[in-house]
Each structure stands twice: as C-alpha cells, then as structure tokens.
Length: 224
View 1 (cartoon, rainbow, N blue to C red):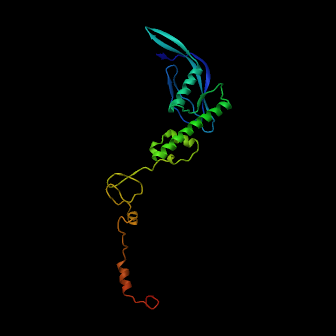
View 2 (view 1 turned 180 degrees about the horizontal axis):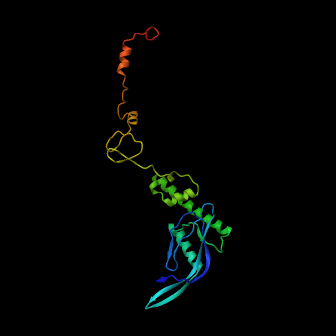
C-alpha cells in the first residue's frame, strides 16, 4: 500500500475553466487536494500540482519507493474529474503545458466543454419529448442548459404540491375541490364551474319593509 512522503518534484498547473465546485480529491501519496474553481470575473483558476515519491509497503518491514511526477498526478486528477459523468464527458479541467494556459489551450477547453454541454441538452430534449416529465431531467443537464444560456421547458421545476386541510392528501395549488375527500377548498371557484349552487345574495329585511310602504310617481321616483 502506498503512503505519502514529503519528497516533491517540479510543479505543473491544473487549469479549471468551469465554475462548478468539485469535492476534494484524495490520494495516498498526497492526502487531500481541492481543485480550485474560478471566482466571479475570473476566466480560469489554477491549482499547482507537485510531484511526489510514493512508498509501497512490501511487508516484513520492506518498502519500495517510486517516483510520481507532477504531470502524472495532474493528468490523473483531470481524467478523474472530466470522466465523472461517463464516457466522453468533459468538465473544463486540463493540464497546461506551462505555468499559465495559452489562448489556444483555453479555446480548446471551451470548445470541448460546450460540445459536452450541448450533448447533455440534446439528451434532455429527447427525454422531455418522450416523457414531458421534469423528474427525468438530471441536474447536470439543467446546469448545462443554464451555462449555455438556453431557455428550456424542462428547466423549471414543477410547483410543489399543497396539502388538503381535511384529508392531508397532496393536491395541486389552487384547486377548488379535493379529489380524494371531496372537500370544497375554494367555494367561489367551485360555484363558477357548477360544482356547487351559487349562493343567493341576502336582502336587507328593513330595506324591503321601507320600500314596500312607499308609492312611486309616473317617473318611478318615490312620491313624497
């Protein structure tokens, strides 16, 4: 089993162009490492990677040292992060040839990231066309559409269901009648659609009595 040592070699730059936050990466030869993500306004973030000398325990108090270069470690980390979503995935992490990424390296990374995101959106479009159910759209596909600035019907989460105050069954917001127990939840809306009879307006009894004792003239006005 390999264990970490303090021996180090020259460093290389692990570049990340995506704002997505990744959990720390763990290795026996360096412990835990967090790959930086660009902050607001930054085109990319760099995580310096240094080489190590690993130690393998052969048993019987025997060990064997082996050299791990900085580039090998960086490429392993980039491969793990980019391959996190299956075959052909790319999340914008790459190893720069020098201390800083070149314009060509950045352009290639942006191209690959956009291609992967468009593949995700296309897969989500097909799923939406088949099911019309946002539950089948993954968070990764939603994130890809947002980063591409696309408006998609499956981007929006369905409204949360309310609870019937009578039977506690889940109901859609704004319904007039609970389909489970039949409770009237909105009398005005229920009457509008004929689910219950319209309530007759009550007339004031004193007003009826006053009006009955008055005579009207030819123009329909109450006579003095």
